[in-house]
Image 1: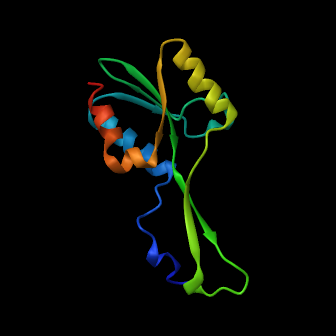
Image 2: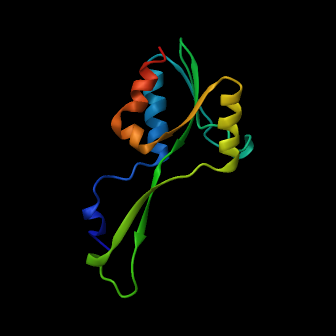
Amino acid sequence: MQGTFDHLPRDVVRGRIIEAGALHFAVGQGLLAYHTHDSRRSAPGFPDLVIVGTKRTIFREVKGERLTILRTKGSTDDDVRYRITEDKLTKPQSMWIAGLRDSGEDAAVWVAEQWLSGEILDEIRGLS
């Protein structure tokens, strides 16, 4: 399957890339930033990132993308098609986001398109 990904319009953006980039940037801006690296012993669904600025604190769930290879029976590497899809929120993640919002907190989801556009970095800049 060598060369299969030559026709992708862009790289797939994984959630880990967004998390790491946002954390690194936030810390570089002098902000407090937290990410649970091993959530198996934490409450299910708690947002991936908490960033504390001088103006407000934000809670963000990060959703990256995944690449699905679509092949038909008997297809060759030249016939391979693909689909880039966004990771979906789980029910516990949705409940945490809704609960935080209902209590007046700034909770939302960051997606790959926001990372690619620079919107996430702009939001982090606005916290200080």
